Image (cartoon, rainbow, N blue to C red; front, side):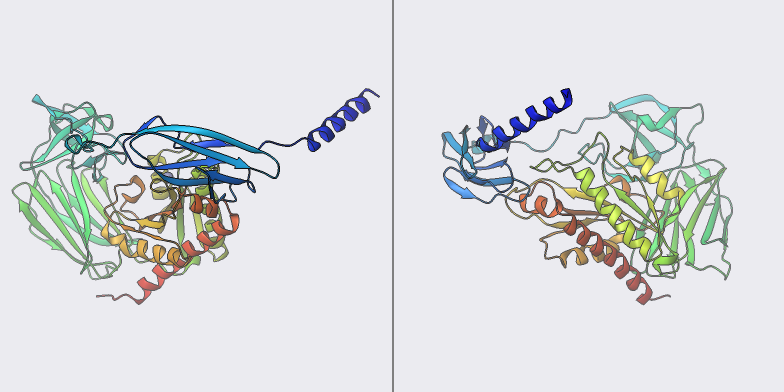
Length: 488
Ligand SMILES: [Zn+2]
């Protein structure tokens, strides 16, 4: 009885509500600020999808996400901007007052960050690396951190000669220095000395060609790949050559030949020429004091034989970019990744994910998942932010090592088949998940969360499916490219 009474009241209330006019919502997302020094001013706002919207009396497009925007040219001084939303019966409007004052030519904003100067440490401090350590060229600190030279093994003794708040400047050799985050080092009694190199050996080992260089102690190193012909170079710092030969066995699959070069009195370089035009990655690390480089053989080029790593950017308490309608980048990234996974698995590939739910994972843990799973190839999926909210901004791919340029190009070309704007192919990209040398990798920034037309596309599951399909085609194109490439 009592239950019946409550239900009757609820139905009565609902009936009353449905006959009442509902006011259209209006939420200003961007552009509600008091002052600006830019004449072009973007207003971004949301309402219920299906409503109409007006900015300064001009009707603007309301996307299916409910977002709308316009670009207003401001006059010097106060500008009153009227924003209105309208449904069948009601209008909501709001005024925003923005004061525009043009920047004076003489005091143009200085966008370069002052570089913190390093303070000398006397006497020099003996430190050694901890797991996850990496060297960087400079002490700059933008959103991607200082430019990384590369990861190095733990337990390597280094001499810190100066410091900033977060970094040591270490003397790698007589003429070379690098920065290292203090948090990735510990103090030690060991001293970083110049050593003579011992014997070198090369042999096939499992699915790699394995080079082992005997050293009296662990030394820092820096590696990179060159093209035409594809060559892996490794500088070993604080080492003078005392090796009188390199035995090269005939059964190597990826390495064509190797030679050492003494490029400075205390820098020994290993120059590793590959048989294949395309490298499948290499690992460098110490086994005891032996520096071991494992150069991966070309795998079978069928997806059914490959292990593909997929990384969905952000997650958990880090949503990444948030679109005007509240769409989270972390959600879109994961959804696209899960679709790619399904497509790849249908073709028989084994897929390793860095995350399969809305959780936060550190960059080093993501990298560890892929390295430990011995993936053959890795793609990180993000969506961009910035630029105009009114226009389409475009799709883009990114790589760090030149060895991964063609992979990034293959995926970009397939994304462009969706008639998206080309935001470009970016190289030398200092993103943590582009840094590993162990496997070919790329970053896909599918579209811009901050662009209203692109947010609308990303909010559509059918479009996310098309992005996933194109990403898979891009990977397949790369495998075809490798198949057609020359062996020397
Ligand atoms: Zn992102």
